[in-house]
Image (cartoon, rainbow, N blue to C red; front, side):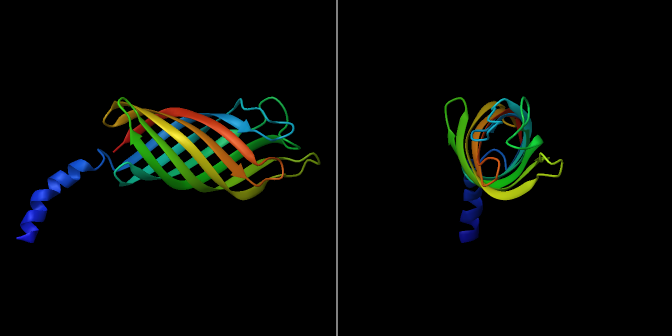
Length: 174
């Protein structure tokens, strides 16, 4: 009897979940460091790839892989040809608004700052960091949306510690 009741309730429970289990997004980025001297230009460009797994209704685990060029107009601290690469993993909670979904996330990640030191040698460094962000997704249909994010990153590098970015692109759900 319990098995029969469970089977009858299963379609209702499945409907209460999200319309998708996985999300993949490709985003263009603009941003930079807020405390580099010189190099505190927020007009640097890059990209970010997002992969998300729905864990519960309105909750997901997200992985973000990104790269941001940091020497658009001047050296980045003491480095030339600087780039920031990161891979983060964290939790995201989404809120269902009338015509879009908003969300907040917090993530831990590995960060790599690459560039050439003034003496011509490799000035790269790696560190663990923290990312926080807000998201907004404007649904085109059940499987496609336009995704926007604003994120802040704290990483303990010699050249800079605080980074800010804005991202925009397309999200696919399946």
